[in-house]
Image (cartoon, rainbow, N blue to C red; front, side, top):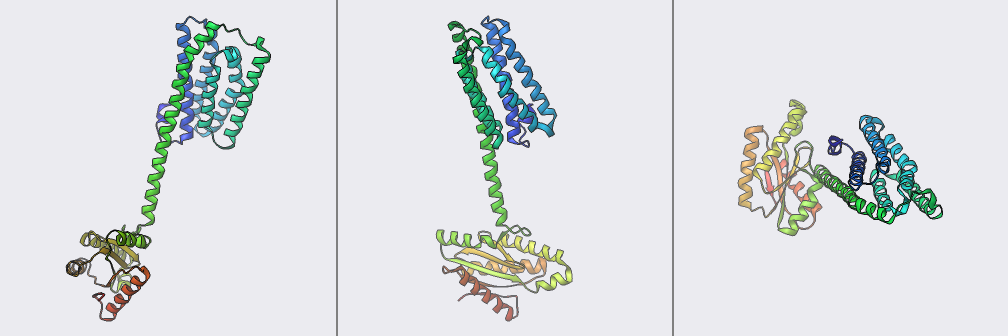
Length: 342
């Protein structure tokens, strides 16, 4: 049982049912032990022992019959609400015993263990049955065992700490599990957001992140520059060496981008076209890094690039259009060139 309850590969709803079973058994055992210590006749414990056997049988079947867990859960709770709860309520003495707090415990168990229409049905049925039992207790008190004031006091003293502990355990466990589920969902959301902004081949950002990053830099540092480039005659590489080799080159280009232009943001703009976004981009520093970058591509990949560098002036579309214009100007001028905006 413990291996399933603590194994988060199982749905929370399934583990919650086992937790409810376990807390029911433990709480009833405590009640039986305390009854024995207080000298309450053993006959008064028979109903609790029968209930323990029923819950343990339900829990065992629930664990073993993995493909029928929902059915077993439904049957066990329906029997508890419609048969066992009314019998325990009547045989215990009704409202003069600690029945009301246990009603709350059972109510919480239903809320935590079910969802949807089944939860609404069971909660509605349970509330109606509880109300009917209290009315019967008022109108026909003779069918309930006599409970003296002393026995009533002992019953409340015995059961109140058990009930409070039981409610606390239920609430704490569910709270912990829901916190874990929320954290897991938040982490998954962050991962999905990262995936949506990343290029699947190279691992660098894709063009979806472009506007967001430009806005971030413009607000925080200003003086944003964009360096757009593509690989010269990349189509010939794919046609002669194959797409696998073309993909390898794209991945290596992205690696060199991140390594050489470290603090700038590397983006795969599409196909063999890449984009670097930075703040300031001092000409001397850019020229040194461009020299290193182009040399790394030539020496290790035997490729050259053509590109354009422009300043961002508040209109991203206009800046990209200018950068593209400079890139094509470099192409027309013989390729293997990077032209910066005046």
